[in-house]
Length: 246
Ligand code: IPE
Ligand code: IPE
Ligand code: MG
Image 1 (tube, rainbow, N blue to C red):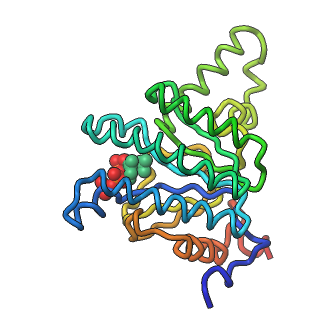
Image 2: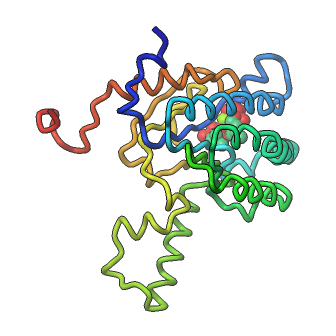
Image 3: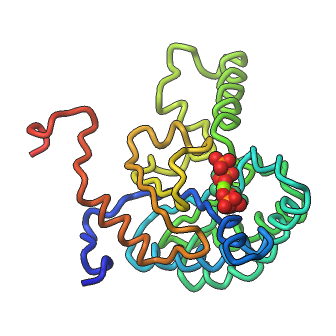
């Protein structure tokens, strides 16, 4: 029985977030340049996106480029930005065919103008799609996002639009880049690394974490289905006791 068949469609995670890691190591293992790994990684992106849509996942967020990734060698950063543009041009078809809406989170103003333009274009063209929301985290860092949120709320307090005593979790949620997304239920990180790397710190407060040894370019939908099946067999207690849940 495949993992896909074992998945309970009534217990799907509402929001899956993936730290796509291991492109460089994948390339190195084949004796190739790191950027070849990023190119190969786009195939895994397509397969996983289609896989999520296929089984009915509503929200998928992919960590594609972190605020810290700007510190990589310029050739690698340039290649990643070019790859972003070419992937957007190519994958708009996949998005439309699968009724997927594109969304982006992060400090998008820091992207090269061309990449930002292409991104906004695909976001606009897919805005009416409703089967799934695919969010790309680009130039994204959770600490930057939280800083941005604090600045926005402070400005509203200073302007008298909201009062300090009314700042609660829902106000905070509304000032994050993820304002329109539900909390993350499942975080997957590939390549064997077991860390969060500044990804969605607030939003994963009660997410289940799943670490796979597979390097991102080799990751396929069946691997994702395995992670979802594993997730479905965990008990999420949210601070309660097991007895309270049953
Ligand atoms: C993930 O793969 C892609 C990005 C961070 C953009 P890496 O490039 O981090 O690959 P490794 O971790 O060096 O193998
Ligand atoms: C995290 O991967 C960022 C993305 C997947 C885009 P990194 O490879 O940059 O993470 P660290 O630096 O090894 O933690
Ligand atoms: Mg890495």
